[in-house]
Image 1 (spheres, one colour):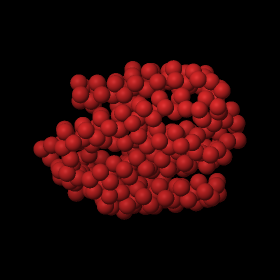
Image 2 (cartoon, rainbow, N blue to C red; image 1 turned 180 degrees about the vertical axis):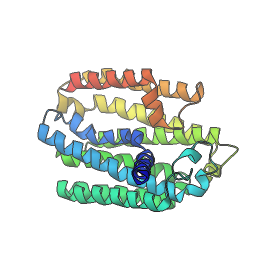
Image 3 (spheres, rainbow, N blue to C red; image 1 turned 90 degrees about the vertical axis):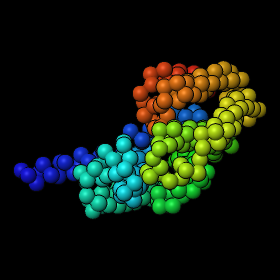
Image 4 (cartoon, rainbow, N blue to C red; image 1 turned 120 degrees about the horizontal axis):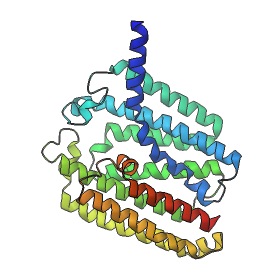
Length: 296
């Protein structure tokens, strides 16, 4: 009975360490399928969904690996100290075995699914391991690595969907990822200005510097999406100019995000902000429905 309780407790803490709420980031994998108007193709949908799940497993393996490395710093952090490893509720050995098992399953299954997809997932995993070990302490490059992770998700999705990756899709994904990355760093700096032990790279940033970077990527994000909607390539592909009418949803989403950052003090975790803010969720849903109606 005690052994069963121990196993269940370990499983509970492993699942927590896997951070399933962060899996929402992997929905970028569906971008290529959605914008290629192949959502109704059940075979492609199945392949992309499996790819999504494999990315989730690989990402969770990296999260656990990262938590193992960050145990000394996380113990001094007001929020991260509650994570299973930092709190001592999950042993390093068990966490390491879980991480190794997850990444092994993800990579093995990915090669069975599609070789090109597997290579992208392998590159994503290697890049994030390098990020956890070193790059997250290198100013600016840390944000660029995060953004490139989103690009790899998009590329993985278009590979499984069997479509050519649109330049606009890559550009919009990259600028949006940079926007989220820089705003996340800004909020981390605001809330942890008196304690940089959890992420020493924060000492290389300042609020004013990050605000300038955010201003640049915000303009790039809005303009790249707006130009995408009216580009001759887009009009020719979807046989309509109406996609430009979805720009207000993008503007509202960004303005709402700024409001939550500057007036409500949110934004340290973009995923939780998206999941917990109803106006943002409704806006995202309306954008998806509008785009689907226009291009389908």
